Image (cartoon, rainbow, N blue to C red; front, side, top):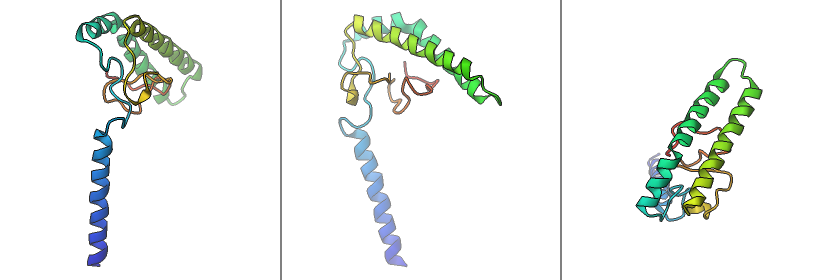
Length: 135
């Protein structure tokens, strides 16, 4: 009994350490999103120019979540909201490109269909959008 408890404890500690190493290892996860390696003034301009777009995305995300949470979701409305969100994100990406800002991290400088905010791993643009997006 003691031997199996010790083995279980060693495995648990090993998984905990492995998770920590993965979280801090360069290239692990999706990176910081837009602006990795960009100067402060350029990012301020980008943030300023995209504020209304980011606010609109957040509003659309909340509308989308509310539609999904209805007992009988309107799938046409869901499709419309998703398209509107994608269009807004394309506008943000165009502003980023205008300023020479690319998405950094493990995405390799390409959006790959996703726009990540700081620390928002797994909440991508083509997914159902996280309303707490880091932009």
